Each structure stands twice: as structure tokens, then as C-alpha cells.
Image (tube, rainbow, N blue to C red; front, side, top):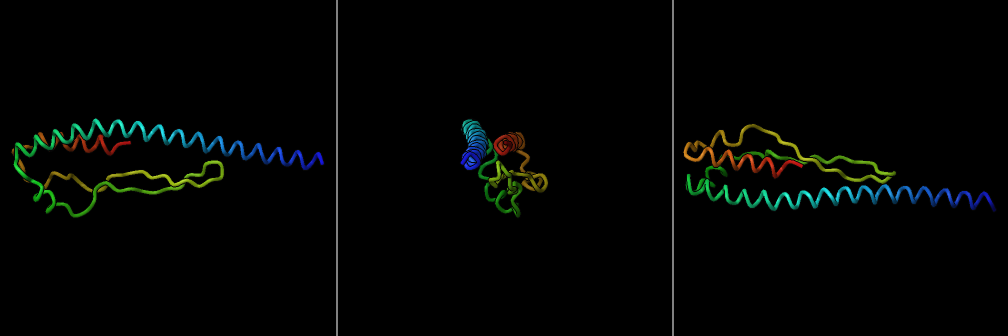
Amino acid sequence: MKARLKGAQTGRNLLKKKSDALSMRFRQILRKIIETKTKMGEVMREAAFSLAEAKFAAGDFSTTVIQNVNKAQVKVRAKKDNVAGVTLPVFEHYQEGGDSKSCLNLSICYESIACLDKIKEESSSP
């Protein structure tokens, strides 16, 4: 009887440790989501203003941008993370490709486009 009790207590303790590890990981992820969400609000506000400045300086350049884009530059890579025996998906972004503004041929609003690129990089960084 004592052996069964000891086994049950050991099993309960292992499950408790697993639950605590998963709860801690969940809180870390939630904290990161909240920080990113508040940062995105500020970045999107700046991006909208910079886009308005660029459109005012150079006119509507959306067709030029659309014609010169052939592949996505920011991609997502999925990995697996093991937390207390539970496999969790982990997603990370990475950039692939060259300079996005090299084929725009817009000499008028280069400064505004550089500002937009800076804001884009800020918004895609973790």
C-alpha cells in the first residue's frame, strides 16, 4: 500500500512540475504578445503618417511597388520546442532577398521611403 501511495505522489509531483513549466512558458508568451501588440500600435501610427508623407511627395507609387515585387522578403520558419515533454510550435521570422527599394526609381521621396523601411524593420523585429 505504501508503494502505491509513493508512486501516486511521485506521479502527481511530476504532473505538477509539468503544469508549472507549461504555465510559466504560457506567461512568457503572453507577456511577449502584449509587448509586441503595444509596440505595433505605435509603429503602425508612424507607418501610416510616413506613407502619407511619401504619397504626398511622390504621388501614388503603389503600382510601381507591386510590379517590382516577385517574392516575399520576410518569411516564417517553424520549429518545435519541448517544454516538460510537450512539443510546442515556435515561429520565427527571417528576411530573405535584397534591397526592396533598389528598383523603384523614385528620386523624389527617397527619404520618406527610407523612413518607411526603418518602420517596417521595427515592426518585423521581435
